[in-house]
Length: 469
Image (cartoon, rainbow, N blue to C red; front, side):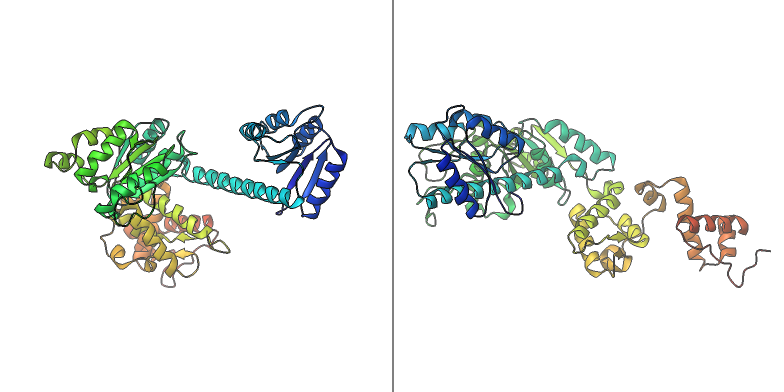
């Protein structure tokens, strides 16, 4: 559809009927094309993509069934409504099986046809919207959009790319806030199940008495508040992936039931007498040490090995400082893009230094929250140290060389930053700064002029109390 106007093709060999349909559809606000037969109709659809095709069944050159087959093979296949005077249930079933949206029998009222057309166009619009959102989600969770400058995270992503196409269960371990769900989604959206559902559940957030019903569903009357049948999350994830976060919080009786689902690929809702098949890939995650729980008898060994076919260990943010600033820039770009007009949010040098020196006990999630606060408090588009929380600023400053490594600074960049910091520490006095740096003043001035020129600034003037000598 263009500007909300649908493009409809009418394929009908009866001239009077074709003219009537074209007139009525145009009066309804649609853009209408027409063809007197199946072959010409197919040529029109190939030359100019349309949203909907209304076609007769019996036509001399190419009947409606053959036309449906050819239309559904087009790259952007239209929705199809078949009209025929030879109505029968067998004809309707065949048309729908071939790809028609609906079927209407002559004689019919125009209002009846317009109702079917409206429903067909609404479904087409919804399908396109879903497909667009699906593409956006898949792009969002593409490997290229996951920030990984550190070798540790690069190794994780390399393994994720290798296992995404597998059907094996995956266990993701790591501290809270390290991005376990992000990795789970990356596995799903880079797999053959990407067009299927991704269902996430935090087991720690569901009351123990409700977990079985939440996961496996229930029948009406299975318990006091079961007033209707309810499909569980495993049934919702059929054909896709279920992400079981905080798997270590699952009680032992439910671990046994989960194990059966994983082994048999079938489940039985509460109160049901029959099982149902499910095709679900399981990705589980935990911040607990499951091996310790095995030794304590609080986690089943057979379930552990069923889940832990492939294990991914996510490193904490404090062990990969190279990722801190790229992650911060990524988050700021996301936040800035949501503003109207968009804002180009940036981190000042003092804010960068503080972020690199902090230990991030809350990992990536904490970094995101700190930046959201900084955006809310900053004046303009530059986030400074004053915009950051006190508990982050009061941490011991990071080792300068460690910061330089994390920022992947060149030797020239490292020299420039050190010179400027020494000058700032000396209150701008270039004589004392030169002495402290072991440089003569001419060399210091030359370097400062180079730095100013690179930034497009005027060269620094000598202080009143300084002389070049």
